[in-house]
Image (cartoon, helix red, strand yellow):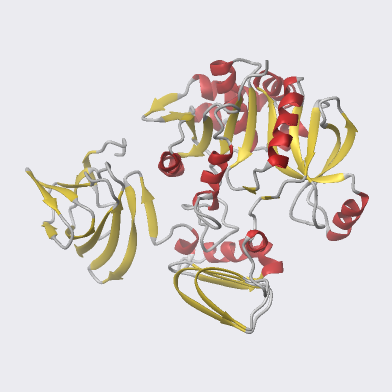
Length: 475
C-alpha cells in the first residue's frame, strides 16, 4: 500500500511581479488577493486532508519564517518542519534538501509532492483525480510533473509535449519547451499535444535523490550535507549555510527533469494560475457585467475589462478599458493588463533609484512574530505607528537609547512592563515609556491588541532596539 504523500511547499521566493502589493519583504505568497486566505494558506489548505497527506514541510528563508509559521497557525494546521534556506539557490537545492530530509524521516519510498506557495488552484475533483494518478505513477518510480491543459496561447509559461500514455494514466514526456514566442504558442495550442508546465512535481524521495546524484551531483552533495549538519532553532530547521551555499543555483527542471528518461506528465484541466501578473489576478477575480474586477475601496464609471484594487484610499476610475489600477498604502501602479507581465521593468527602475528603492523592499505594514505594525505618519523627531499584537504574544523586553514612546490602547487589553512595574492598559487608556527605560508590550487577551504608538526623539530607526529578553531568539 502506498503511504501518505508528504507535501513540500516552496515559500521562499521574493518576487515583485505583483508590485506594489508584493515586495521583497512581503512577497505575493503571503498576501491576500482573492478570497479570505493568502496564496500560501490556500496551498496549505489543499494538502490538509489527513487521509491523503502527512503534515506539510515548508521551505522558506530567514525573513519569512515567522510569517509562514503564523499563517499556518491561523489555519490550525500542524507542520512536519519549516526548513530555512540560508541563501537563495533556486528550486533544485531546496527540493534535494527536502528529499534528503524526507528519506531520513519517512524512508526512500516516501512520495513527495512539491508545490509552489504562490499558485492559485481550483482544488476540485479534476485536481484530486490528477493527484491520485500522479501518486500511482510516482509509486512506480517515475518523476511526475503536472501539465495544465492550455486555454490560450500564453507566452508566460513553459510547455511540455505529451508522449505515450502509461498504464497509470499518466504520459511520458517527449520534451520540455521554454516560454515560447506568440506564434509558437499558437501552434502548440492548435496541435493539442502540449500542456503548460505547472511546476508541481511528485516523486519518491529515493528516486529523485538518485537522479540528482546522476545528473546534478554537486546539488545532491550540497543538499545532503546541509540536512546532515542542520540545526534546530525554535520551530525551525536551519540548513547548514556553508553546505547549502556550495550548491549550484539551478532549477529542478534544468537539473534533472529535462535530462532524465524517467519523467512522466499528468495532463489535467483544473483551473490553475501561477499568479505571475495582474492580468492573472483579473482573470481569476469575480468580474461584473462590464468585465471589471474591483477589490477594496473603488468606484468605476464607464470602465471595462479592468482590475482596480485599493488597500488604502478610495479609487475612482473613469473611462478606461483593459487597465490595472493597484493602490497600496504608499504607491499606485497604473498600466495595461495585457502588458502587466512587464511590471518587473518598473520595479527594477524604482529599485535602482535611491529615492524610490524602499518602495520595492518594504510596506508601511511590517509583520513580526508577535504581530506587526503600520507606519501612519513620519515627521521631524516623531513618528506614529499602529501596533497589532496577536493574542498570547509579546514583544521583546527592550529599551531605546534615542527615543521615548507613548502607547494608547484602542482595542483589546495590554500588559505593559516598564522597569520593575507591570500594569494593565485597557481601551482608551495610555502609558508613557521614558527614553532608555526597559519595557515590554504583551497581549494576554483573546482578541487582537491594537495600540497607537507615538515615538519622539532624535533618532527613530528600527535598529535602535536593545533586546534584553526575546522569546523568538532575535538579538
